[in-house]
Image 1 (cartoon, rainbow, N blue to C red):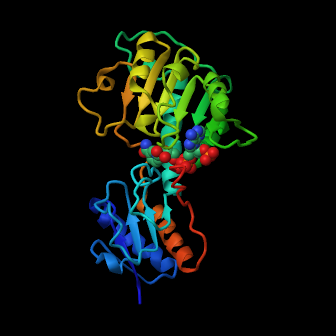
Image 2 (image 1 turned 90 degrees about the horizontal axis):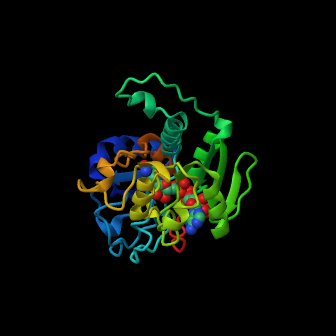
Image 3 (image 1 turned 90 degrees about the vertical axis):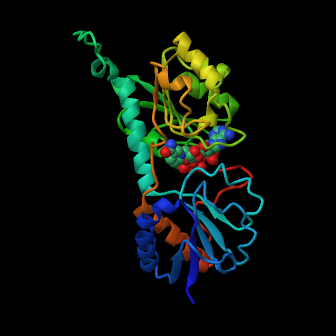
Length: 310
Ligand code: NDP
């Protein structure tokens, strides 16, 4: 008897995922029937994504695990009908994409590239940037993505500090944690990257008080989640010049409404939640590995701590 896996992620991505998931199942030695349409009481595993049409898990009486195709889980952690293990996505493709996006936007601000790219007066006015070793960068969140970005920036020579919930140690990154640690982390960096999950504990991490702790003329780069930032406070800090520029990939409301002041702000770059995308080939292998583990009675990878919210 094959295992039944329901693909309940975005149907638009089915053509891309069907072959990759079936390949990964075969490579893992699993006999899995994968479909977008299986009677709930016959489903063993759900391949999931935020925004899925499946919101009530009650009819899935023999469900063993839900395997998410995204790293962010804030829309699902509170779902009381979900009673089986729930794994989020950690995938090499997703991580590499985020490292590239964060590194690119950090280098843009570090090198002052806009002055050459947008130079309407054709001014010949060289402004030499400091070397990376003289530029301090802070990464809020030292999980899978934050740590990978912090390590990539440190490898480029930046003076990197990071902040997380639990204390950490790293030979190339100055690590802070807790409320006091946040103050030190924010005072450290002229470029601040947010890679925290959206939870009650991280809401408005950047607010009027914490933005004021950052050095004057700092840059904010947010590929984490919209609620991490108090928008009113950020706009005020941009107006005053305390924050020189904000590059924002994620927002409280997406798509970002047309009347959002962010769109027209000269010191804001809006990107449409594209910092990193789940890759079908690598993420399918993670899903297959978790099904293999579950069938073998081994602990699943990347389980979400529903209480912590990430
Ligand atoms: P992880 O769960 O691996 O890491 C989260 C990090 O945040 C951990 O270091 C954790 O601390 C820290 N953290 C959580 N709560 C707090 C808190 N209250 N105070 C201080 N630190 C805290 O997540 P990922 O790195 O995989 O992903 C991070 C986020 O990136 C996702 O939640 C998602 O929102 C976003 N994302 C955005 C994408 C995009 O395209 N824009 C794509 C993919 C993800 P600790 O280490 O102590 O647990």
